[in-house]
Image (tube, rainbow, N blue to C red; front, side, top):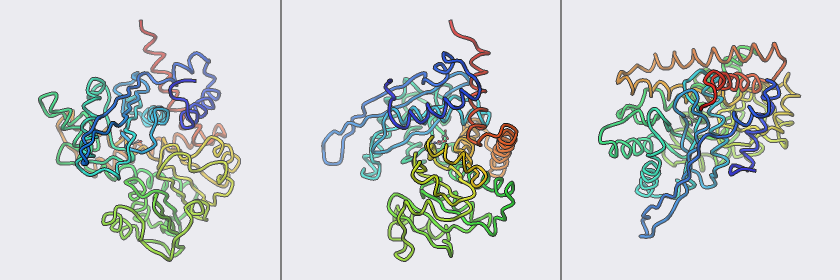
Length: 419
Ligand code: GLU
């Protein structure tokens, strides 16, 4: 029992136990590796448009500080709790270590439905959250970024709030900012671009021709929409999409540019079409080459894992597959190749790292350089994981997480225990 106890934290712990068994890590070392170093809970009082003061709970969990500052997104979501934030922070650690970034993992957020706030109220929540976090963050301590329910504008308010308290502009305090404020070219597209790139490597490995391939994308926020656009640019037909308001399926395919324009106008996928509506649960089990869950955690469960009809499961979201579902997918390893979240969606944090480096140097690169550097990192990680998967007859998730955990463990051993 700990303050983090809950289904998502249990999931991160169960995944870790599998890896710790695989790497034969002793029990005391396991606790040292998994338990978050710091977690902060704050209350954010905000003056609402109706004249009342509402108080929102905010969190930040910094998982380990062994390799450098912590890094990870801020989520604004109605049912967020500290256990979920801690699990997401742990996954960020394995992700950063897997792709070789000099960071520990972190995650944070506010328990609030951002879609129910006016723009003024949203700014109030964002600014107050950052103001409460000032003693615990910094460009060399903890660097925030966007996640579910947050965006470039919110990162701009974070950066402004932090900078006003410092008395000078500090762009390197957050990543995912607007380009005009020291954000990087290509950050907005990075996660989806990375998902599509890793899926393309998997198609090559499985001898699937992208021009004859189909994809279903669950979630149409930043990650889902860019995944659909980037897959379509590689020739893949997008036959299914969904968000929290609607799900559509059409074997004839959708043009993701038209879907993106609809979302830009209406905010959601609802009312896009009446003909191709499908039950969101049924969408996941339709036949396709690539299924990309790009929304929330725990959507591939023991209930649907046996019925998936994809060749590649490309995890754009963090934690979309439960350990029970993983056990089923492990049995189906010859039918379905799982591209684990910490590899598949790592393009986002890789380009965030580039943004931080550019801000520290005040020297900016062009988009091609950024995309080339990102794909070379993801490509190297993909091939390393694939080689290990084949050599040790383990899943891509076990191979990827083992590489990440091993790097964090080695760094802790080499630094030693203080004092
Ligand atoms: N929130 C994103 C993730 O889960 C990005 C984090 C970052 O860019 O620091 O990987």
